[in-house]
Image 1 (cartoon, rainbow, N blue to C red):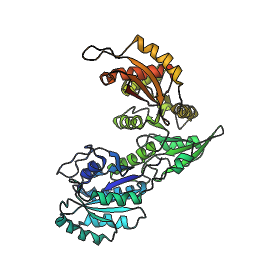
Image 2 (image 1 turned 180 degrees about the horizontal axis):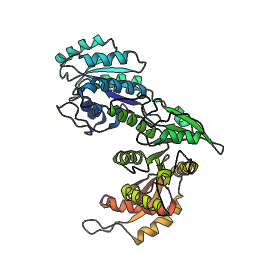
Image 3 (image 1 turned 90 degrees about the vertical axis):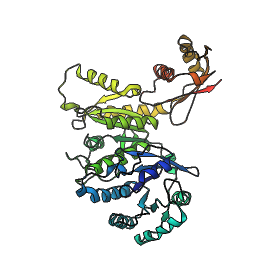
Image 4 (image 1 turned 90 degrees about the horizontal axis):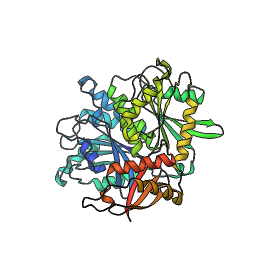
Length: 437
């Protein structure tokens, strides 16, 4: 199912992060009176009247340099328009319209995307009268709100939901593997896409983030069609480095959310970095199939032990995500790139694999008896009596046990490894859950 994406834009200190926290019912975004305190990518899910949409807060992508300040905000609005299904334009209702606000409104007026002007920090109906000033933007959807207290957010969300498309027909009818190629700028995503397709669909340069448009291609592989998604960043050069990162993140996470399997591409000379770890964590959290592909392997001086040593180092960094297959490739020389597709297809099949209940219980329960869960704090024995697999789009294993609230996370990880050792599921995140027997 396609989940709409909503991007929050506006100048610093107008309450974007407060609005994000209110919509997503979280405290992920740092809120402070000092402008520009959000320093990380902020994304989450919001729900209203049974409808779920994704939200991205742009607060952390405003540079410190005053010379780049206005340019950065304008670029973020343009990026939001390119990628989002709707834009939430947050302003400070107490301070009124600023020149930057007018610049943003001018960009939004030229777009066909739904845009909503939110005059924030208006905590009372009397203060709400200030919203009249914001009609000067020439935009239809203007709301006086308080993100802090939630005032008038219901009326705004009702109208937002009406403007978003929640149709899932296209995703339900299309049974082809959706394979997202994701990673930081300049790791070779476009080069890999071109190598697989056999022609230059994507522009390739040494400048990080050279692809502007969202590119979906059809790869025909031994009679099967695969939807290949390239997720690179900006085509044009930009002096605002934060916005290259912002655009890359918006594209990356949207592609990941809508994929079946994600190839997370690393530069062999840089290895696994913090941003790669965050992408992996999000892929696991969304229960997407995952492959770690080490690109530019042809540039590494190596002997027979190099690949194994490199893989061992990566697996130590992956921690509990050690079920992810690792493959060494070169988009330039096409080394092992088709093996990458074979693994992707295997993972796609593994995600929907069902283990017969009888077989699951016969094999796993015998092992559980050898290594039972630890006793409860009062010494009572915990017994796992029955196992079944549920879930349509990824594997969920239900373990029926008494006093299951006392089963520690370490034992859950033991059970997950046990299932993987017996039944596979390489590259497939799974859920281990317990029910009272």
